[in-house]
Image (cartoon, rainbow, N blue to C red; front, side):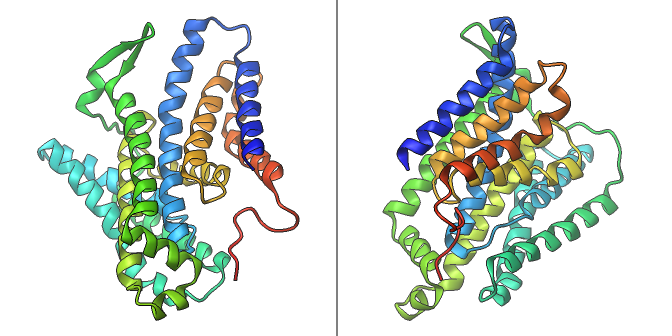
Length: 314
């Protein structure tokens, strides 16, 4: 498995090199930095998906919609003159609240259903949240900015905004922190036990609702943070932010819905590849398919027999 992951990393690195071949190094550097920032968001979204899937068996298609609702609320409160940090807290709170609402009131009733059924249910919830968000905020040109956008540092001769740096460092820190939490804490052990067998976990004393509530809360917070950053770095548009879940799922597939480190690498590669494709006049129109290409490549490379990469043993 390690050799296959190394092969995947080398292949993605080669693809990025070929796309950028012949372009000035300064230009490539700018696009790589921009791609890593967006790729960090893809990876962050993928981490939220993996944490929830490893704990509850739910592949949450609604994470993007939750983040979109959160950043739109933050933007609206900012327009009303609220103190900026309070608008960010409110956006994070809304995304986390939506996640907890689904996790406590809807998800438990679907716990015994197949993985596909649970995933489709989250897709329905995503459409409800997106519909409500679009009803409250009509389609219009808006911008969401953070104070860190005006600050920058020089890194290897390139100007990197503090916002991009915050996104990257936060993603790396969360990957490390969540890995430590899952592998070396009592609650993390209970989360992993619940992922293996819900019924047996309840028999040995695992408080299922408590563990699942923590997992849904973590996933909602990550979705809210991702939405805030995506609204700032890319575009403040509910539909676009909602469907950021697609490259996030591609990043999660790169980690087989299990390895947080590979999710991070996969997300970064997707972001960089998307960014570099804009350098080519022939390929820039297909940059949106990059997540699917990366995910399919990983599926083909790591497929084991006829068993799904992310299949859960019954």
